[in-house]
Length: 409
Image 1 (cartoon, helix red, strand yellow):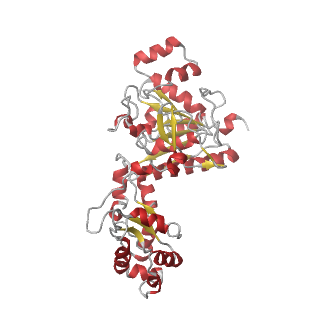
Image 2 (cartoon, helix red, strand yellow; image 1 turned 60 degrees about the vertical axis):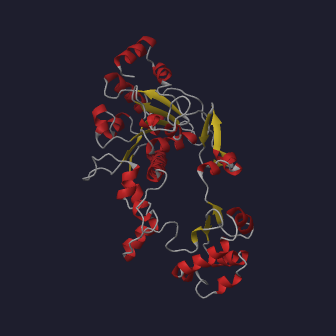
Image 3 (cartoon, rainbow, N blue to C red; image 1 turned 45 degrees about the vertical axis):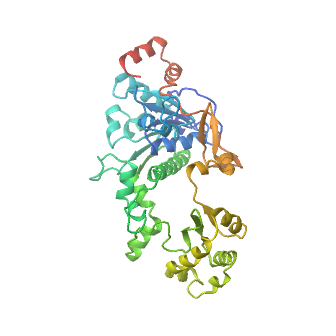
């Protein structure tokens, strides 16, 4: 199958870059996204070997470069550094003829073009699905939006916080009687990015058979609603309206944080056998035979009494003692760590932290054949690869200088 069938117009060229390893090696991605969901998605693809060229506005770049504190020593916000490694950066003013021309050249050779502009905005620059597919039939295009297309919310700017609010997540997050609360990280953005990659990879798989690309669309609101899983099913099938439950689980007990003599302990007992182990490890085997606690359904029904019985024993010793005592007994427990404690854990740092050119990064959680995915390069400086990419595409030094003077790059 020729390159034009696989994606990338037969006469188009793609700027050569560093050689990457991984199952997506050779995949060409033009990244027109910014902030979090899109950059997170493209970083995952880059970690798997794809060549990602990130397009940013001249002089400004991705908004997250300024979303701080905290900032790195060079003044770049750590927010940006979290989701942009293994990419190249080019600055293009898409609303100029010169900037749009470069973007068109890249899109004509790309396998994937991904954006998070408001619906319809890319048509202004000639980068919409119909225009790109006319010259590059195999291209997979993808749009991330706040609320999808063709509905009364479509023109609204979308942010993770708004999706968490509208999509029901905040209504089930927080302490009973307290204020609905967002999750501590932008979880809707991240899940949206994972759905984006599922859609893109599915479209690429189909393209191997048909030679034609697809348009993938994922919205923050849709992603958030899909995350309601059992809570959504409970409402749809039984009309059950979830409530704020703090750290307790509506259907499992004990599955919550419990007090010890010093710091809380996360306990996740999912089976009756595990509860028997917990009762034995607390020197209270009779609890497993108490009619209130024999089955999970019994324990859920009598949760306040169960909690009182367990905490009466746990508060006699500190968290560290119980971890040493309960883990070997096969009881599912964990410390409630701060972020600094997470990265003080040698297992975490060994598996998930890597330093590249002086920038410490969290690597992809994916492992292939037991090996972690490599982080080849740190998040790029704003427009760090602009001139190299343009020269590779055929623009001369004088032409590049002229483009920079005109504000196109």
